[in-house]
Amino acid sequence: TMRGKKMLGPNMTDKDLYFRIFASFIPMFDEFYGINLYTKIYHTAITRISKTENQESIMWKRRERFGTTTVSFTHDLMREYINEISQKTMFNQSAIIFLHVCFDQAIRNELSRSDKYEMSDMRMEASDNVNETISRFDRWQLDKSGHSEKDRLRAYIAIKDMILRLGKEFGLNFKKMNQEVQDEYDYYLEHIKQPFHDTQMYIIQLYFENKLKSSEEIKMLEIEDIIKLVMIMKRDLENRNYMYIPFFISGELLTSSAKKITKKNLEKLFKSHPLYQDWVDMYPDTFQLMNMDKIYSELHTMVSVPFKVVDYKYTELRGKIMTPVDICVTNEFARILLDC
Image (cartoon, rainbow, N blue to C red):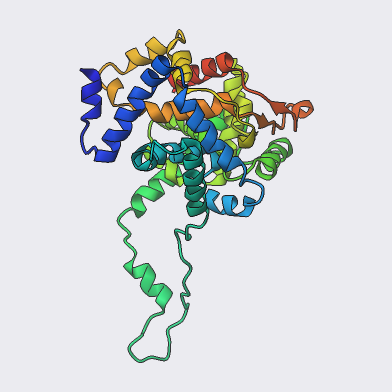
């Protein structure tokens, strides 16, 4: 069966297989017992995390530097529950108390993790030691592999050229910015919360990959490039009657105010969209290889998390809270997947 092929994918670990099986049966549990299991566990996870956002705000900002936000960690916590915690549960005890204790410990472990990159002293000059003829910094540069320098240079040029060309299509001269363009650029650079949320970057990267016809250069995007892409995307998407995503990509997401929505309902909403079958038909041979969990995760953020508007053009909307409407947001999400 298709489910069997999916579960027996290449290089799948025992934990991956367990996660796939457990996640596949959750809708059956919900339907048979009427317990809405996934939503209850998700609500418990996001509640425990939200209680730490104020008192541990500095630690969460520290984790954001390495790409872990409260929303992304909620999904990690769900997977950890299914892979690790659920296998150790004593079902004759209180499951709610057990979950709270395990989730709290997992959150503490995440916030107390050591930094991925350690600092070290690199002297810029050689020491008096007769055996050291060059500085530690120079030695580090010599040891560092340079095989990808050509690729990085090509990516850098491709990005800058694409932004200049796209900008001209929408009346933005980034090579010689006039005062109006400079003011808009400065506004976004100052007011957009950095780093961008994972889902915002997902949408921006979809757009970028489609325009550049490549996904390899994404790692070379600098914050200045992303701001310029946001300015371009807002104009392009608005011209194509997108009403939500142009505001979403620059907004300040309020993850602590996320509303509850089950994975089952999310999938049903997405698959019932008229464009879904068109999107599937675009990839007849590779659709089964797509990471649908990733797609549903990004859609979940878009339909559940409100945001504070950050927009240069619509000054009257600045600072106002925009709340997602499931059908409207799903419509634009499906459209941009098809466009990109």
